[in-house]
Length: 80
Image (tube, rainbow, N blue to C red):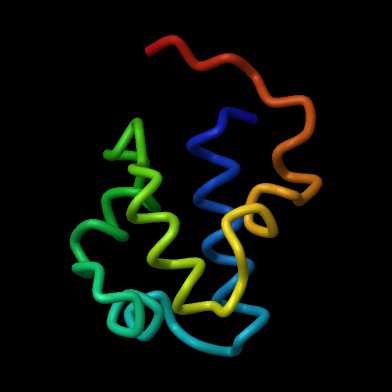
């Protein structure tokens, strides 16, 4: 799994854990739906740390908690 795939899955897990839609998370975070859609559809190959931080804040977790998840273990290096 690449880091982009792990970030995508982690965002979806956050939404599932909070029983909210991705659109609701985007709104709470003040991030445009198109930005989050780009991440989830793999169009954004390098999701910004600031965007992830905003999503974390809206989810009431730290950025450390976001990345401290088994999804981020043993990642493939994505050089493209």
